[in-house]
Amino acid sequence: MAFHSTRSDRAKAAILTLLLQGGLFYALLIGLAGDPAVRTPEPAMVAITLPDLPAPPPPPPARRAPRPQGAAAPPNRVAKATPIVIPPPVIPVIVLPPVVAAPVAGLAADSDAGAAPVAGPGSGGGGAGSGTGVGADGDGDGGGGTHARWLKGRISSGDYPRAAVEAGLGGQLVARYTIGANGRVLRCDVVESSGSAVLDETTCALVVKRFRYRPARDAAGRAVGDVVYEDHNWVFERRVEREE
Image 1: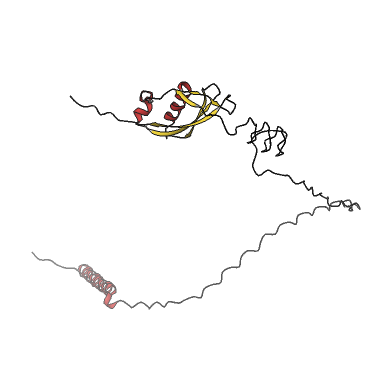
Image 2 (image 1 turned 180 degrees about the vertical axis):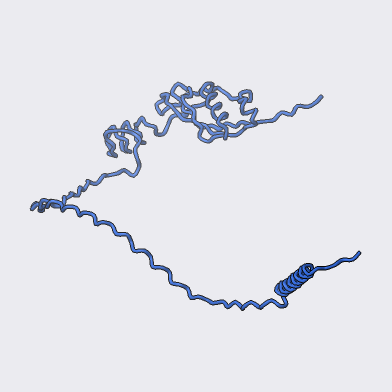
């Protein structure tokens, strides 16, 4: 089978050949431009240091409108000092008369207390008188007479307070009895405590209740009051129960 080309066919083939060649040439140029080996070097960057700029000045302070001034006060009255001057007070010095003091304080309240050799109601050491001295015929607390004597009344182990027994308390105390002219104990005071308030109170309560005395006598044989000191010893003994 034979092909016959015409003039127009040859012209079309020539145009197609030129287009192919032009495309290849364009592709070659694009490839050369994208290769880093043939890329045009970029210019080097230069660092430039700029000087510090001055800080901006602060804004001017705000101005306030001036406040109105107050009016002056009216003039005050003129004060003058008084021509009268008060002198300082004069305090008189009071000199008390000397007081004659006795070397020993008296126990009585007699109106006269001398030491004259005559009879009188004083408490001196002169002649006969009714004072508390040691005169010839005085009726005071001088020499002579007898003290109160115990007659009856005792405190036994059965009087031991239950609270003291349970607590195991014991001790010794000194009590002072005030005995009247009738021989009864009017008052009991603990001078030295046993260390237990229960024992002290029990002792005085039993003494006032039970104890009786033969009253004291003065030099004339009259019954008078007296004071007696006695010791009381509370001994606590713990009982040990034995097994039979």
